[in-house]
Length: 75
Image 1 (cartoon, rainbow, N blue to C red):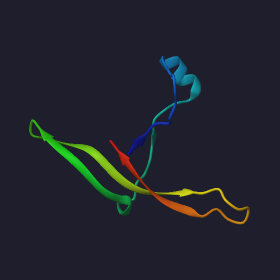
Image 2 (cartoon, rainbow, N blue to C red):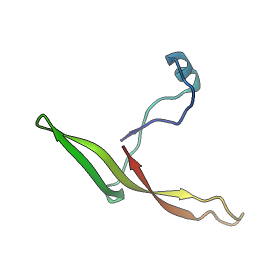
Image 3 (cartoon, rainbow, N blue to C red):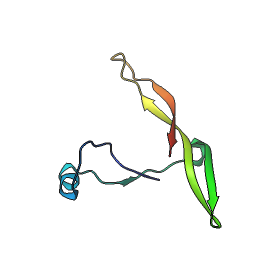
């Protein structure tokens, strides 16, 4: 999957390049895929939604940062 950093108010390619906003590859383990939706048009199948499970680190006490499972829906 390709992802892109969240940036606001970029109007030109020069601004995009100056901020280093570039797409990057993200590897997804098949066990992370919760589900998907697709549509068919003109004989082709197109992925319209992908739902994946991810882990985020929750900054808490100084003695450990537990991971919290979240679900991302990508359209």
